[in-house]
Image (cartoon, rainbow, N blue to C red; front, top):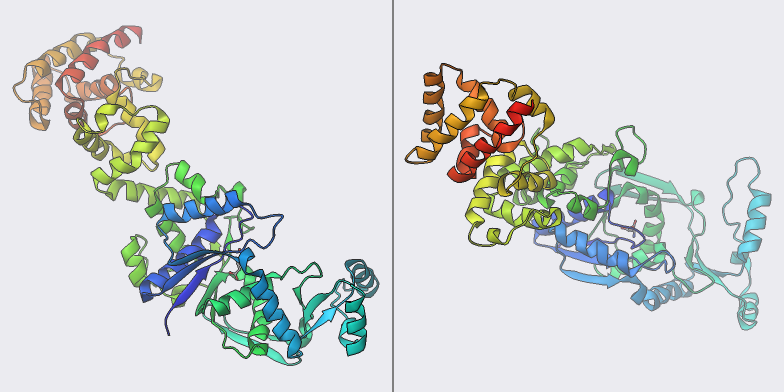
Length: 478
Ligand code: GLU
């Protein structure tokens, strides 16, 4: 059986963590099997759907690198097809017209729900004679089309949750087409999944309760249903439904906050799936290899924003520096630290700088801001760093001496800068650590930075010397 899966978002909001994970799991199944991923936009709720949301969803999928093979297909363009399926069900007696108005239904619900608060459609219109139906139709009364739920059990083997059964008696005769002529989600999704020859329906566990009804439609249409796989819900650390409160954001907001798509993909894959080991780092190719519906857990997944940052750090540290430069460039532009020289002449320097400073960073934003410390002329001195490492008056003598040594050494590389500093410390009868700590503040303004000789080399001789000399003013102030 060829694998044909679909991602079917409703464009009523941004693409969030849950939807993005559903998209990812479908994508992984398709890519692993050499199958097909269909993007279907379920935009039948006219009032709540927006084109801008559809564009945003597409942009988010593209940014995550989740490509699709067919679509985007807009469900709203297939309404006639959905109605035709409802008509076929009317003809075979699996569905019937219902003339009960929403007001009448509300009244009967109020009267009938009693103490339990539950009421299911009382099938009043099922007993209408053929003539009575024809007369109401002729008088132009609006009619919905309801599915006639048969007695007996309906069950399926969910690829994640296992056996799920429901009795027909527990289900109401659900609406297929509203009296306004609008097909419902239940009808549209089955008609579309059939027409698109979908082999596996992978979606959020919030759709489990819809599945028995959808299965009844397949049965009534005499068609074989796809495999269903429901993926567990994602909760916040406090076990309530995931929301902004938990730091969860829309996919594009993560992009804008300096998260790498590789990190988001890796993070999302592990929200509810594992390969059975403790392994956490999966690049795209290894996810495609390792993913299986059997590894998807039944228990709710818990979202942990710190873990996402951790993944982001891992990918910031492991991307080839040239690739990291490509990714960080737009963020640098946004932060106002981009310079034209990084386009070509100083591209290599930028890459080397990124490779030097990245170990401490978990977000592209912070990394981009740090570039400014090295690339710009002026630096901001952190007050705490100045107080801690610039409080020895002899530095007013030591730092100019260091500047002079560095100005005159033959080569300006890791070994010679280190040996110049250590030799000078010996000659001055002071600790190398004093010069190293003070140089760090003088060259970066901070108390934490990469190895000081890496910093010198990346800044280059001229800037190193200049910053050492300029920093002396800080000593007398402290
Ligand atoms: N459009 C539905 C949603 O966004 C998905 C329906 C489905 O996958 O069957 O929740």
